[in-house]
Amino acid sequence: MSTPSVQKVEDISYKDFMDNFYKLGIPVVFKNASKVWKANGLFKPEWFRKNFGERAIDKNGRKYTMNEVLDLVESSSESNPAPYPFIFDIPALMPEVLPLIEPLDLNYARPNWLSSKWFQRGNWGSVTEIFIGGPGGRFPYVHLDYYHLNAWITQLYGDKQFTVFPRGQEAYLYPKNDDPWRSDINIFEPDYNKYPLYRNATPINFTVSAGETLFIPFGTWHTAYSLTPTISVAFDQLNAKNFKPFMRDVWLFKLREGKMKAMASYAYAWLAGQSCRLAHT
Ligand SMILES: O=C(O)CCC(=O)C(=O)O
Ligand SMILES: [Fe+2]
Image (cartoon, rainbow, N blue to C red; front, side, top):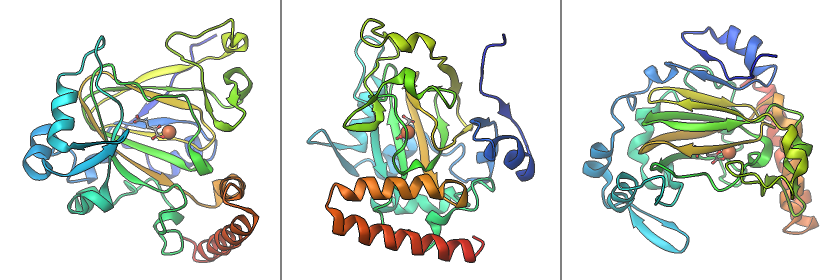
């Protein structure tokens, strides 16, 4: 049996991407899709210090400036890792960066209904974010992305290891009862007594390096581990392909705010989806 892996592709056509990966829900790494972004090659710690050093985020109830974040990740180590991830919302905190990541879809992540005016509301799990981390920084849990969106993660500086699980291994990951998009298993030191079925799981580990873009199809369990100081840009994708599981999540999440809220949000999202579908976007 061959070891499952994630393919790396270079200069693949849009059609080949759709036929061989997108439609089948198979993760893939694009070696050079980010060449169309001005951010490619520009996004380095010094550049962020110079231009955005005082921009600040909150993490775990603490404020961190960009300079502090970069100090932390540059002195981070396996044995004493900096917190991970540090997340900067691009439209909210660094709108100047938006023109540097055009076209956002890298000419592959389309159609994307999240760029229509219908869904640009910030409450559908849709984000355009910069992730910053340092050596030893682990994303805190294995998970499915909320709202069953496709995730696109472009590594612009450093190396990050990703782990994905082939579809169909849900039962081996013990989704949490109160949050079935997350697992409590520590994949680095699995507790097989507590999670015996995890022995059957076949995690696929691979490194995404500067310039490379990872496509994580909806419904793919995944997590990440920063190997060096890293800077990446993440955005999401929604269209007819994942609209059904998206709507299911809209219902489940909004139900937490009550049945009226769930019905109103569901109706709105459904209508928005029909409009996007008709617009062929
Ligand atoms: O750390 C990363 O780059 C992965 C982030 C991720 O999976 C998420 O934010 O949903
Ligand atoms: Fe994720």
